[in-house]
Image (cartoon, one colour):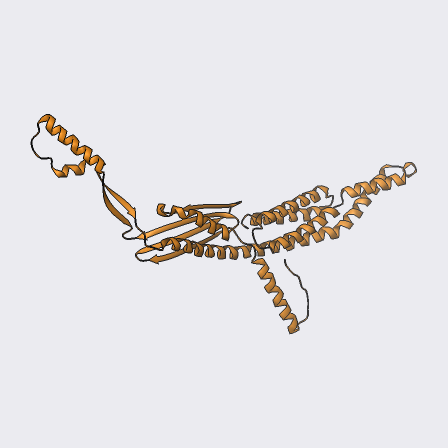
Length: 322
């Protein structure tokens, strides 16, 4: 919510008050967050280096994806809960890398059941075919699936907790970046909202002039084309009132002022507000279209074009607000 104070006093007490107001405004603006951010956290444990990298981009809802080493896929649910505790909207991509030496532990595995069958078959073949001589032991190594080498990833103790802690640290960095960018976007939105307020105020000021000019034009056309003796003046005045009411933009102006106030209140609210603000701008655009369709005045039409232009720019910015 933006506060306007216009004073010409140079009293030191005034300056103190003005500074406080500006600080409050800045705090309020910082409440909105962008959906774009980046964060990374690196952790060293023994000969292991853990890197957690998080990227955040625009998305209509909260969308989570993660690339995690297979040995730690069981942590995906906990990582997702951490992400949900930090963010309300956006596409969040998490990348976890583990690098270092001696991560793979190799072991030799022998299928003894298969070995027994193999030896029984060799013995039977020697007996059946009267074979003489010993079978070299080395041949056993070439029998498929008899002796295999298995690899198992071996990580230092405490790496599981380190992954979760690094994820939180990276989330903090992403959130800081999203807040900083959100502040810039909010400042831009506040400026455009001020412009919209000024345009709507001009519409309100010119409304009475336009209605009066419209009434005079209708009256002149009736006078020019009809004989006063045959005109029912009461009916004429009634028709003039009906026609001018059709071109009256009072309701639209009042609703636009309401939408501007609602936008300001929402912009100062903590939490995901992007979709709400987007809905408000849609309503503002609807009112602007109605004013444009009712307009019979060049100046009002110019105001309407400017109004639509500012609303469209706001809608573009809101695509990145959480």
